[in-house]
Length: 213
Ligand SMILES: C[S@@+](CC[C@H](N)C(=O)[O-])C[C@H]1O[C@@H](n2cnc3c(N)ncnc32)[C@H](O)[C@@H]1O
Image (cartoon, rainbow, N blue to C red; front, side, top):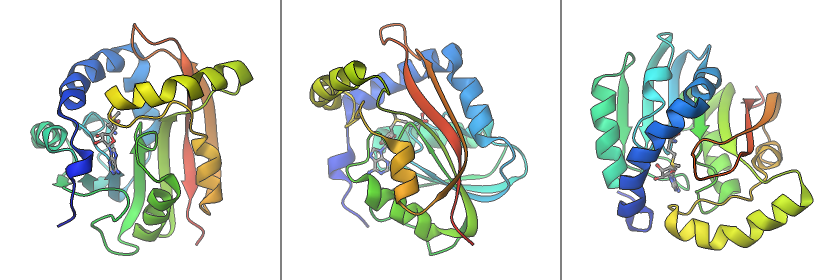
């Protein structure tokens, strides 16, 4: 069993249980629907948190293997999994060494999680490994602003934000990282919104990338 002690953020986990509900009502629910629409077969979800995606999976999904390292969030996700329309199996693990066999997944999902993993190329390499050839990566992530000044502000704010935000970085260029990891980006929507009252609107990407067949 992997050592998950560095991924335990009890204060963030309890706060996320509250703010994820507010975020859902401010547009995140629709973005989750778009990110997961049309998925089928076996899905690996990375960093499932408290399970906010679960009710958004279409019934063509036969199983979701939901990997989550934080004990508190994983326990909350277990409760949501029990009410989910598709079968969900929660697994303790982390992005750097996914507890899944090579090529076992038809699709992989990341939502609001590549901002937090310590090593993005390693996480994307692991997601590629567990996807079957031709499998798809669905992503919905907040990213660094395209505006120079906002990007610099995000660089300045990120170290403090990360401390209270479970390791979250405001300034990652995640779409470029996905391409650099060898995925073919097929769909990419860039947009801004404010998922929380106290946070200004900021850039997000949502799309589909494919592991070459
Ligand atoms: C902002 S929450 C998002 C949760 C969920 N994906 C969602 O859409 O609501 C970030 C999540 O990333 C998880 N996380 C952080 N580092 C991780 C890692 N190295 N491997 C897997 N998950 C990680 C956290 O435990 C947390 O559940």
